[in-house]
Image 1 (tube, one colour):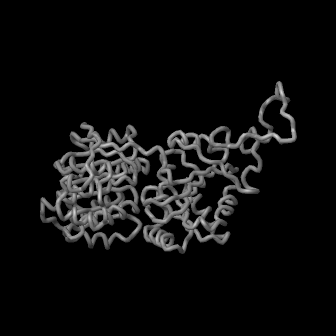
Image 2: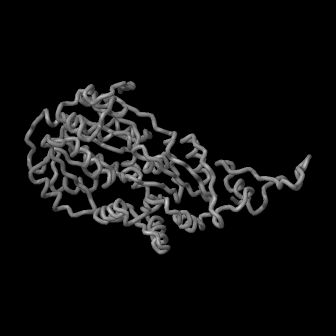
Image 3: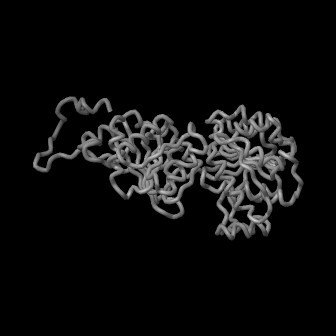
Length: 431
């Protein structure tokens, strides 16, 4: 595997993209390629297979989408009914729709056609769109296999295959589906695998999928953006709902995503907020695609001030103007924290991220701060979080900038050995 070094290409023209694509990029105000685009596009235009390691939001869709469009335009082949020339596989419906939207913008005016195939909505409209064939199919594994089994999606003309967010694919248990799809692809094709992380399983998948690939890696941005203020609130788990409602009394929290670990947790938090007079919707994988789209439209349109979501939203949803991200429950994977708070402070704006940390989550907080290099500011909300500095220091247990216990100014400092055992007060030791 060839490692591609960092390049200094500062324009799309220098990457070898053709005039129609450059025109579409100019109309989108895309003036310069991102690092992964600058390194991946020239190699993909040569026809090489590629392993791309980069986080979401780094421009991966352009990195693989632009070369695929250019190759398809150059081939100018007639696609058969129910066939496609390129297949892009995504782990979530939201990401598939987002990729499709970007591809259509990149290919504006070229005649390149796309079809999105995903579950959660009726299959017949998708089948009807496949009847005359298409240039690019973007989809999720389950519905793709469904149409493949009924011969309403035929892959024998696929010359380009993209597997996006490979690590999330594995996390969601799609490995068997992926291998079933791979078995139906032509042996002669260009393949691309993109992933935010590189666990052992991704390496094994890359070995079976890619042939003599180039490797392009954009180092993970372990330091979160400077424009995101990061705060932690220490709280018992049972007090988190009251803490959340208390914070949302502040009108500056205008458009907020609240992250939970589970779907059931998202539903419960959203119901509690709605009962408290705060417009909120829950969004997760158990909801149909139509319901998820309605929820997202309500959030974008301001009808719902708060979107309560699982990590599904961290990689597949892009909404402008998000003022705050609240980690109601800390993720057990620190990289997920970076993805979550990246929903705010986009396009040059500033943002605020709050983390709620109960005693069982202190290890998660340590891992997050080790990854990001940021020690969060400790904040309090009267009557809900620890009321004094001694309690705060005990609960934080050295994982954040908890204030040190202060002595009264009118009390002389005690010299010599500390009285008692020197341990924390009994009521705090359990924290």
